[in-house]
Image (cartoon, rainbow over the protein chains, first blue to last red):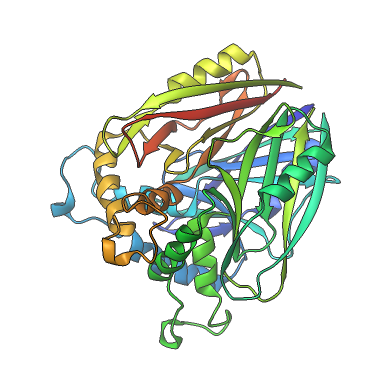
Length: 139
Length: 139
Length: 139
């Protein structure tokens, strides 16, 4: 069994944003030399997501509104304690809706994907550099 | 390390539907000869889900209503662009709520499951043949 | 390739609850002797979750309210059949929002985590002993 590990740095200047990271993951798969196995791609933070979707600018705009509706920014009166900053709780909730991680099969040295699958990064607490972990095991 | 790969074809004639696919995945595990490892089962499409749940007809009827409430079909006025077909955005959202993939442990050549766990396929944009990827690694 | 398997027993006396299980998973990783690989941690039940988040008491209180809002306990009139107990459907829905499982990379014999990542167990149908499966593969 071979393994490979890399951290990818990402920076979304605004509070929310969606980025396609398929090319960086494909580069990791090539670097690993692994032909057959699994790649795990996960956010190393608890307020951002790695997920799989079409890369469609229109989708992102709809997700932005949809996530705000399902997991709105909390108002001061909603808080029962002072432990968590007022603008962070909804970021955790949005991240749960979109997920933390994906596992993708590697076959013949490539991401084993359907036609429209892309690996996306969803940021819900931007403005600083974040990290995504890429770990590959296989042969 | 051994590996195994198979695509399973599924066809849900209506727009939405839920199918149990545990038997097909068990057959893959047997065919693979792998005794100990992980099986990854994922939709190869961005508008359908693979998830784990009880197989209960009653659950499906409730999920149908619940998903429509949380991720309703968008109305023409909700659209800010023409890129995405009017009846597709909600399918992507429903898929995110139910998830893309599951990873299941294989122990002694079998799916290592609790009593009620079944692998389910959730379709949110049916009417054509879809594919599920089964990838197994282990020994 | 080496593998390791363990079941962890958990008991949340109330209907809902959130527990940090990182220490038990770290102990499994040590016991396995595996330096490089993946650990899969999943609920063996269909009404509880394993997910990754900050360990923040304040978050749990907000999640409790948030999950009740998105996936409320159904009322008798909401039921179209008698198959599923009246107080179980929402537990399945809450579990889907929080997820069934996590896969975590193991690097140099440790969970390969960002600063705030903890493995959490979310119970949505407590009052009896539940099981979490820990399966590790690697070298």
